[in-house]
Image (cartoon, rainbow, N blue to C red; front, side, top):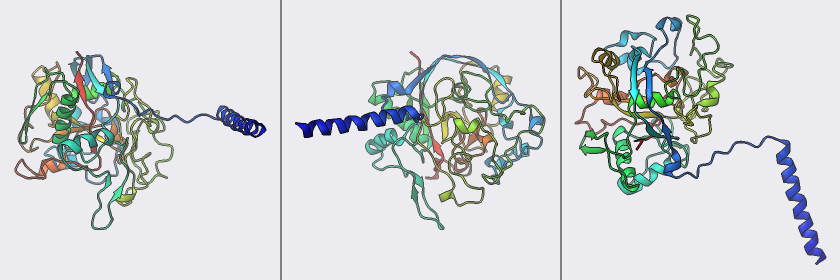
Length: 376
């Protein structure tokens, strides 16, 4: 009996020591990943806002990024120079209805279930390797799913809708996809919905959750992404670092470091959320939207009084864009400008190929997505 008492006393001492130790230091935040899909959806109350970039071009007079050729340099509008949100002008009034949006980007834990059932294989989870470097895994689990094409994201939405008893929004005919927005199932956000949610319900935040302008955005020429190494970036964007995985926080070392050793995705929900409770809307992975990309679409909306729930052009005007779909939010490997809530991007592969090319649907280790549903 004395031996039992001694063991119990010893255990109590250990428990007390652990408790006191935890009280003496801050307990680190551990995200709760045990959500079901209803927990993952956040209601965004609809409203009106001025969609598009509100910052005048002259404030970026000395602006420069250090990523080499940008994809927008290949467009006929390549004369945009360094003002990379030129296609987010003019800022114009938009109204969106209420909708639910996923709190987190779709993770491998979620996307792998779809892949097992519908595709028969899993997407890779890191650097795929090249002629100089071997493939490198980053891990699956709660990291955002990557190597997701726009078509795979659409198919996932239909699959999830069926799983949860909702109406499927998409009808798919080969490479042609039609969306019935009156149905209650999962779908990709429109650009108007995505930007409204990323901007905390239409607030003029440069990034999702914050407005880190280094204290002097509205001094002409003050904004800069002029860094090529982490040492050059010391002290830049202190607030944005708390909200986003980008090249300042993801493990990036310098502009010339090899791709297999220069940053990676991170588990969702580890940075601060925006005011709506949404995580990683800026950074981690690029997110697919429903809309086709066209740099002149905002002006088209103004000219044609398109204000209620815009869904993008019926096709990319002029044909030169080859029906590219829009990407939003930036990724773990990008400079801050790409993470801006107004920044619009599209796929280079879709630009260069066409429907008859089996590689038409672009994806890489920076592309993922999140889902929305109409509020009932």
